[in-house]
Amino acid sequence: MSDPLHERDQTAAALEEVARAAGPYLGSLGDRPVHDHGADGLIDLLDHPLPERGEGTLDTVRRLLRAGTGAATHSSGPRFFHFVVGGSTPAAQAGDWVTSLLDQAGGLWLTSPFATRAETVALRWLKDLFGLPESYGGVLTPSATFANLTGLACARQWWGERHGADVAADGLAGLPPMPVLAGGYLHPSSRKALQILGCGRDGARILAADETGRVDLAAMDRALDEIDGPAVIIGNAGEVNTGDFDPIGELADLAERHGAWLHVDGAFGLFAAASPRLSHLVEGVERAHSVISDGHKWLNVPYESGFAFVREPELMARSFGAWGAAYLPPGDDPHVNYNVLGPESSRRARALPVWATLRAYGRQGYREMVERHHDLALRLGAIVEEAPDLELLAPVRLCVVCFRYRPPGVPPEELDALNAWLGAELLADGRVYAGTTTYRGVTALRPAMLNWRTTEADVDLLASVVREIIDRRAS
Image 1 (cartoon, rainbow, N blue to C red):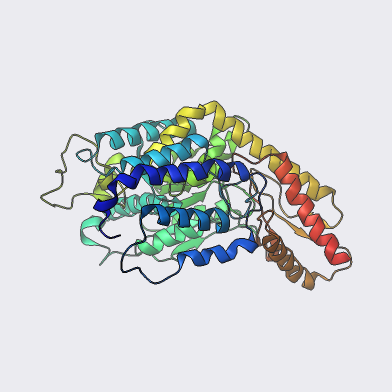
Image 2: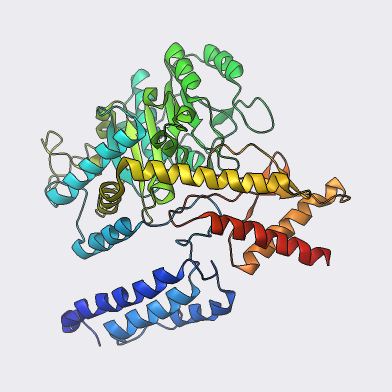
């Protein structure tokens, strides 16, 4: 085989191969291990010299399906509790297939009015779900990191303009460092965004009240008093180790009092707004200058998906637009062009799975899912508290349970190694996935429940596998 033009009649057949594999694969996710180490050898099916002449469409798709359905980590299933990862709802997964089918250039109205309108509607629905004012500007991004980059780029542009500079056009030369303040919940994705923006990965001043990382509001108030000029505050809605929250409303008070920019990283915690019983955790988020979240977490849409919202929409265009390229629409184009509102120019129509899942399940569906996962986290927390050799390290606030193995008689200096062993054994076992972290200076597990498929049976299996591994060690 050579030029794909010769196999244009194979396109539908290739997609049918994927569709035939989808039913059995998705149907097996509730029973199969998250990772089957016995199938790792299938990965070798991917690795060979570049063919001089291709092997053909159908043979290639079959090989990819054989390797992927066997050797992939089945993170879209109900028992992947590692990191903070959701799955893909049926509507979102189908919407993503439609995205690939249509293959729209989603950055310009000119190239796809369809993709542009879908993104506009999806962003409006998300603002409604999160309780953000409809007047906020928005853009879909590949991830929370890109969303943080978007919000903080707008903060940097705003800060530069208050110093009489157009940072997007002229850079940071000659300006003082941009003051950035945060509590100890600051996430690495915000640090990476600051790094990319030239503000320094370690440029944020951390003001924590204790070893948990809880923000010291009084210290932040004093620090803002001492700063000559505008500053940026980063608040976190959902800390990855425990699911705890910065007090967003009180950070908004500080921002208003000191004329600072408040950026809120709500990668997963922003979804608390969907639940009346949990929305108090994000009270005040509607007063932030920029807010972000992540779609491939609690929205349960496929990778890659994030969202950024900015109070002053014009700042988005000033931060990312005005390239002066003759072949692109002018800056006064009456149509919305999302490639001038965020960091990407070439962008797929990632709004389609977002639109599909929100239309399919609506506000009530996401409220029920968020509250169900909160109940599951509380259930696991109660199992931990009832066990004499397990220790809950932080209250269960949302969907993350932070705990460790602490058997009687084991010296404190040996507990970290013991918990690192437990985490490694869990991953090696493969039936469930829940890795380790460091919290308050100790090694701990921190499983997170965000997948739409996850039920009580999956959480109970996690607890029983932990118990099985512990008992095996004791024997």
